[in-house]
Image (cartoon, rainbow, N blue to C red; front, side):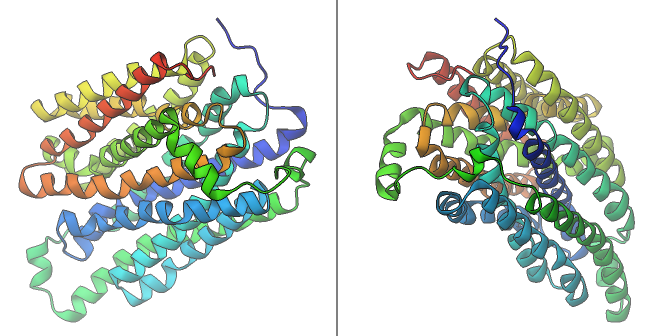
Length: 426
């Protein structure tokens, strides 16, 4: 039966529109970062495991800053959390300029950590804020709709990486670089790192503009009164959340969902290069196609949720994604590349759907609960390193066993929700 509940109340329309820019912003940052694993492995001549520290720092920051973000939201408001996150992220993005001048890998990792830390605060604040902008019955659809603008950002991030970073990489191999003089190598690396720096500094400027737009917008009464009467006990709230099996399993499912998504996109370029015998630029183009499929599918899935239970769609997409990963392993070639693109269609609904299902019915505990779900993004820090071991010791194709197994955990959560007494209604 079609869900006719309005997505957002009239007084929340302007804040909702501005928040959609934030959803697009963190999508841009995440998908500019995915190709950096391949970029830094070439610039600094590192193994896949060493370059995977890019994702470890990026998603590790999400884990570290989620609880502080929840405390900001609890003490002040969602708007304060959003502004704090935007400011921190802008500082991290601006740090790419001094990092490019020092030409050190650790400086870039530090900049990424600060950037991602700000985005963690932003995401922890924006997601539950969006869910509160209307009735609970439409919360899952509302979050999916807001998250539909995230793929616009991801597509932009991949486009910026594919046009401003990847084409600027010197085609010299690791062996050829080892034979260059120190001066020649410094010139090559400096040019490549400048190419990395430019889109991030431009991104920082955009974040500053969004910060001012939100800061100058008057908060509606719903946001002004967002704090609950009486302070909530952190210990008591954590105890309730931990004893809630539906929420606890949701955090586990989100861990493996983000792990799968990060693994699929991080090693897209390597898989395409092996499967089609092409260079990084061609691999980047396939990543762009994947983001376009992700974008279109997000809107399609949001529409379908007006007719089909979110958990049903989640289980169906997780099943298909796992099968596509298996096919990629056994058929690494042009058809495997098509399967790789198809996985993005399956991924499109997973994050917001798991998020909304896990938070369903938590009430005031949702503020800390949201932090737990953002901390689950740690999956994107850990599992790419596991996948990198497969890449280094076997092949990029074999490494897709890692996201394939992760999708099976998401499938299990969808089945659990459908059989649960507290299953989501949205």
